[in-house]
Length: 110
Image (cartoon, rainbow, N blue to C red; front, side):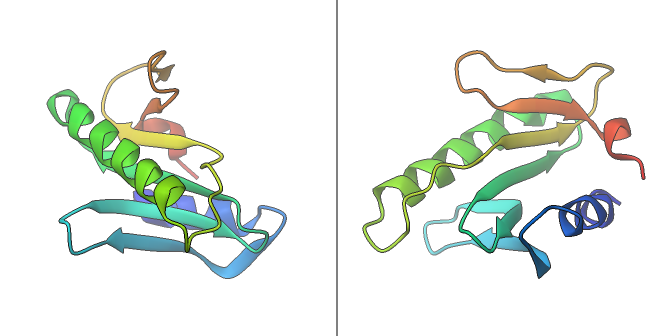
């Protein structure tokens, strides 16, 4: 459901690719559920963590990915436009220390 809704929204973005959503996994064990990539190199990262107790792990994954991209000389070095953990809860919020948004699943309903 989350990926479906994100696909609908991402496909409407200016500069969206035909298939703008990707899954990220690497040999270091880092996994991020959704990467949105635009044709100009801008990108965003989204983790889905159903349950407040798992939000911290989603935040850690997003920060690890951002660090990897920014430190990789072969990557373009773009910072993500945004980082989001989609989870449970009643309210959306932005974490002040990392700038990561934590949003309830209900906010994505198409």
